[in-house]
Amino acid sequence: MDRNRVDAKNHYHLRTLETLPLEQLEALQFERTKRTLLRAYHGSGFYRDLFDAAKVRPEDFKRLDDIERFPFTDKQALIKDQQDNPPFGRRLCVPLRRVRRVNLTSGTSGMGQEVHCHEDGSIRAANASTASHFAAAGLKKGDLSAVLYPLGTMTGGMLSYEGLRTFGATPLPLAVFNATQKIDMMNRFGVHHVLTTPAYLTRLTSLCMERGKEPRELFPRLKGVTLSTEPFSVAWAVRMEEIWGTVVHDIYGSTQLNLNYAVTCKYGAAPDGQRGYYHLADHFAMVEVIDHETHRPVRFGEWGEPVVTTFSREAMPLIRFRTNDRVRLLPPDLCDCGRVSRAMWEAGTISRYDDMIKIKATNVWPQTVDEVIFSFEDVDEYSGRVYIADDAKEVAEVLVEFKRGGPGADTRVGLLERIGEKIKDKTQVSMRVREVAHGTLPRFEYKARRWTDERIKGLERVTYMEKRPG
Ligand SMILES: [Zn+2]
Image 1: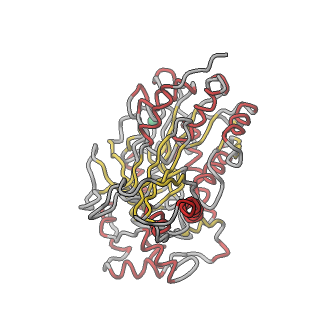
Image 2: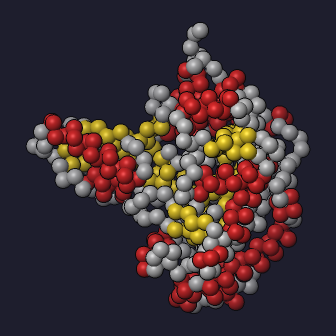
């Protein structure tokens, strides 16, 4: 988006917190981190054991940097805690009567689903962090926003829905409809805003074009499209802004944070054809960005892993949680919109250090698919890829090789079907399963790399779509 074309005025949801001078922000982060450490240590057996084993106590936190003295937590530790003490683990710091929401991370097996409990305060912070993005993007009270994420046990859809309501806009939860019906509903109600993934935006674009209509004609009232979950190229974002006639935004949150911690402001994800910035909600969480290997804080301009300590989660605090996400840290003073944080991140480029792939906004662990496919003893090898098909659908495809001299042709068709059903059952994602001839797929000597993600390239396909005559 051309910077000169956006509203000159800046809008905030929590003006005082979002524009707090740096010194005051750091003082607030110190106070809130200290309170979180005390609450976790005295309120939960999980953290007490963890801190005791690391020979560190909340009293050792005397300045912000001291956070580095405290032990990390990660997905495996949370899962083990839940398994040993079902269903919530020993992390729960409040009586159950104060819990108002339970969220699960996606995926039903493989790495396991984490359970996260929230009390009223945690929910309020989550909604406010999301509302801050809608204010920054220039939405107005009463605006209609199409929420295309499913509303389930994950936080994505729920935070979008409740964040819009907290801001004062009206969410239209359209996930239950098919793509064509979604377009019809968005057009019928004249939506001002859309929340979706890059791959799905491409799909909607393609369907609109097939009808001979550009999205900018179908949705003339749009003030923004907010993406999340997958990276994209600047060229694609700029093209989408032309086709949709609005600003493309991006937000970063997670079920663990229970916040939309990093959000773009009025300039969006690609101002003036360059990478834009995420502004960070440092008033709701202390997020360090560390080198994935050395665990030292990275410098501005470098890539690192966000490590999360949330202030807002009283029921189930999260301390120094390793996200395994990969972000690029930028200096705090690049934008003129008045928001203050200790750093910014580069928009539209967040990826993963581990193998997890987000497919159709769902976390999929290749290990889960491995387990399913190799539970069929006739299978010799497989490979998977995620791509954007010619009809702009996001597709996860699995190519299967049967063992030499394996089952007959008739049996194989049935096997492929059953593999597909079992994958859907375990990952919640539908995948296309096809057979390839024996010896076609690569074999792995060390770590298997069976999955490829071709979506960023695939997003560019929309460049070649043209209006159909008539
Ligand atoms: Zn800004």
